[in-house]
Length: 185
Image (cartoon, rainbow, N blue to C red; front, side, top):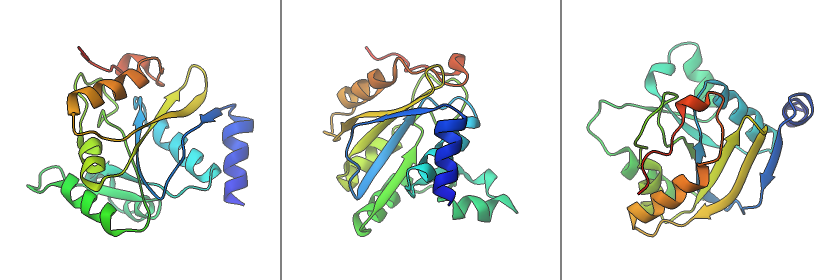
């Protein structure tokens, strides 16, 4: 029932399309960009429910207050404690290795504001856990959710990040002025 409603709302009522050609294995990281608005979260939740996928996501701990905390956790949210001196990437990679299924969506910009340098935690989690990165682009101009490329981290961070960023260069976020792939030379 929820799946049918989300499918109707996203694709019929809101007019979004999808172009998904990549295989989704039991374990993967979704690198989702651009992330320029709170609408991206709602769109992602509609999409995952319309497609019948349960995908975890990282969100700053400040959003996990009552009554939103239990709701976000129920939706798959994992609070990020930025001040603690611990390796989130190591912990997530170990969790991925131990589980039969691991599906995590991360926005590499780490914020809705414009940033020149992307965070690389998603890459290191995938590298350490030996799992693929599915590149998901959201284009508000074309009303398109697209995943047509998978990256297997090689360990060559510079080359892999360049390839990842180039994939997203033509996507238009809700607020296009808040998105950049930064300097890739």
